[in-house]
Image (tube, rainbow, N blue to C red; front, side, top):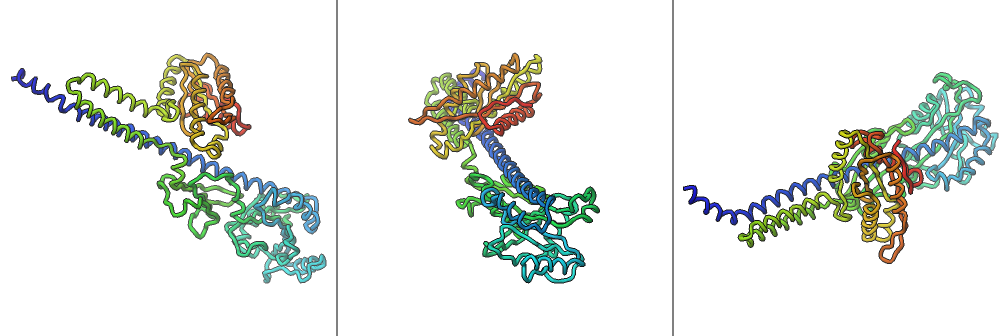
Length: 523
């Protein structure tokens, strides 16, 4: 009975073989497609997180810069009286606000006036030529804090002089915080209507206290007792944020809210590409709220993406893999059907095509270099080898300097040619045992195994820098490109993939911060 069934089973094998091949190929395609899709999302999230961190850093740096400028005004009154109007006027002129501090609308001086001194204060200001000067809003208060000077003078209009911001609870909170801490403090969202604006606009005011010269200010009680006034600067939020990015990343919407409450009533600023209006975020994953403390006050920075962000930064080739894998599966099934008499040959071709598909999943389609997944696998193996034999190896991160302007000025076709040429130069420069990978955009990484001494890795990185520095002749153009490199060495700089990668990345960005076109060792 068994001898009779054997030829029947063998005869059926060619019938089922094409379907088996198709099923296996489609299953492999799905696995590779899903892996690539997850990897693309992870890389997109990494880019989004970088934009978020960079935005927060730039806002903090801008606030710190303006605070430092206002401290100069504060220091002016450490050596001169509050009533020395000429001193402030001359100082503000030297600052050249329009050129150097364009976000500042006015700089002003506030004097603290006790109730008992109110009449004498108003008389003194009138004697200075401010006819009709009076502290307003009216009403009896224990302490007044009128504005006695502001620069620029807005064409000699003095109607603002005598205005008492202490009477406004929103401004008073910030003034009290500055007084008690001795540090800069800002208001929450306020509506500012400075002379050159037709309508009130969202903004904020920064205050710094002025204390009596030579008097102690070590405690809150001493600071309250010896306070004589404040200097302040007013900012429109849209002008404060203007030019913060240079050229803004496409598909990004940024909003800043007062306090930790991202609602429309607390909105201070919002921006986004006009082409993005009305487009929904590509995924709720790519949005985040960052809470930051600015001069003692909380802002909520809300960042979200739109479809253009994914189109610009995404490198998702999962659709290519899906189409290619499906096409390969159909082709293999057809070949198997046509070549039932040459089963061994058909299976060999299937194996070759499956290997080609596997190669596509592990290599960058543009440069042919190992992608992040394959590079990570080789790094894991080298870590195991180095730990087993007490050896060392190096990780070199490379990022092209100013690569984005090449895409902007010459087009993505030229940019792709540059990336391909960089890949060729890297492969020609390193040893056969080294691994060169592309991990996204214009970032490359080199694994240098079995390192005899750490200086060899730095020498290789410097050699790479010089090779990349050579001019590129592309499509009749000569392009000069530099790169920044960071080097991390196992085990000195890290003992696992995460720490080594982080240290190499930090060293690379330190090279960028130090002027680019250089090599930095993790430290």
